[in-house]
Amino acid sequence: MHTRVARLFLVLALAAPLVATGCQPADTEYEMDEWIEMGPFVFSIHRASGRLNPASGGRPRIRTVSVGLRVDLERSASAKIKFDDFLNDMADGGMVVFPAAKLLDPEGNEFDGLVHRVSGRTRWKIDFDLLILRRGMGSAEDFLELRTSDLRLRIRNLDRRKGQPAVAVVQLR
Image 1 (cartoon, rainbow, N blue to C red):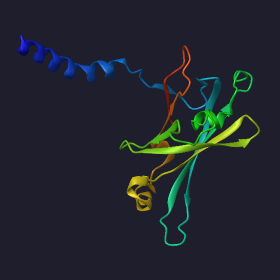
Image 2 (cartoon, rainbow, N blue to C red):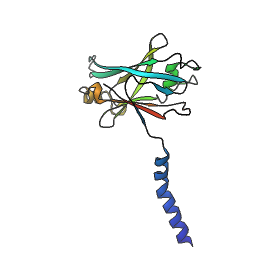
Image 3 (cartoon, rainbow, N blue to C red):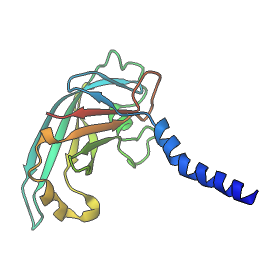
Image 4 (tube, rainbow, N blue to C red):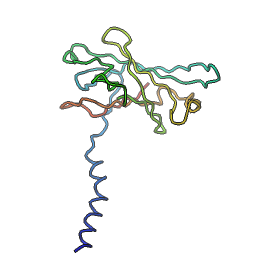
């Protein structure tokens, strides 16, 4: 009897990760300029550009990628929070802990980005410094040659509603 119970627990323990993985919603792929609905917002990714920040004070150069977003104000009218607070996970007025937007390179490295207003209430951008903080500033040298088109933008939906994606992914150009 104890052997059967032990086997049952072993099977359940081994199967749990498979069941949990199968229940997670898949990423939803979008094209640039395609409208994305997340929480109370409707927005699109309309541009992406990269630049090298020059070295200063002995620091290495850093590639920064900026991703431009447009918010559809008419379809986002019900929003009670600002767009940047929503995507920076500051909806409760707290500190930025887990920004919703990340860039992924072909090797699976992730780079966090913060959303900032560019103009009015419709134009926003997300800035990403391509470095891995846990490896230090020197890691920036590893990403100097990455092109914007090598990167994918991944945004978690922090207020998922019916019919909306859990995660939106956009291949940058």
